[in-house]
Every structure is written in structure tokens, then in C-alpha cells.
Length: 163
Image 1 (cartoon, rainbow, N blue to C red):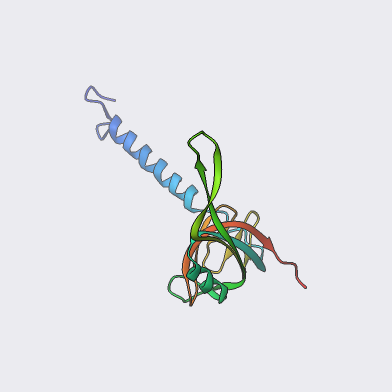
Image 2 (image 1 turned 90 degrees about the vertical axis):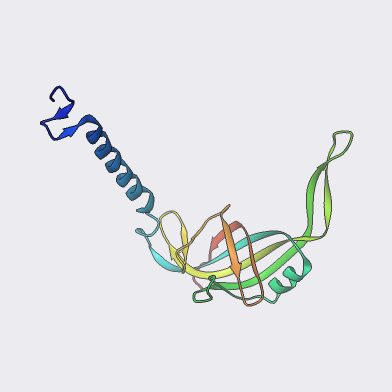
């Protein structure tokens, strides 16, 4: 290194740090997006998952109860079929004036539990749908069908046994 901070007259310390930073970013992107979910695919399986759709009106429940195929946003991929719909009055947590916590019903709002059966791939640690989305509990997913477009949280995922 010379008196101007250059290494052999071509690079300085800042140049070296920038190169190291760029290399770290490239490695980070490779680790993040080089997911093991798609590399360890084992088989084509049938799954059933339940999606909790909160605080919807009765016409959304009616549309879900028509069942039908679930597709991607552009209706190009078949992502399964709605096989069952259960619903209950939506309840919300409220605190009374004296500090008690109560659960009150929200008028004209319902919570639906939508069961969807689909085919997909199983990997070492997850289930993957035809549109390469991971089915995992707690994940938010969208439901597109001929009659409804809504979203909810996946409550359960179950691999169906071969019969």
C-alpha cells in the first residue's frame, strides 16, 4: 500500500470494501432465493387445506358455498376445488367500561372455514401447489373461483392418503 492508500497503485481500501460488500449481497441473494423448497420435491400428492376467511358478508359465504374450482389470479392454473364451507358469526374482543374483556358478535359479518382439495408436490419440509406457492399453517392465501375472490389464513394442511 502506498502513501495515498492505494494497493499496488490500482485499488484503495474503499474499492476493496465495495467489492466485499457486492460479494456479500450476491451470496445473500443466492441463499435467500435458492430455496430448498423446490429442490427436494418428492412426489405428486393430494392435499386438503382449510382457510379461515374472516369478517365477510353473507353474499361471500353464498359464493363460497357454490364451491367450484380454485384457480390462480388469471384463471390459467387449476389450484384445487372447494369441498366444504363452514361459517359462524364473527366475534370481536371488546373491553367494557369496568375493564372486563368480552367477545361480542359483529352484526352481518361471518367467519368462514373453507376446505380446499388440491394436487401438489411434497418436499422435505413443505407442500407446494401447482403455482409454486407453499402451503403452510399461518400463511395468507388468496381464493379465486368463478364466484368469489377473497383471502384468508391457512389453518391446517393435510396430506390425503392414497386409497
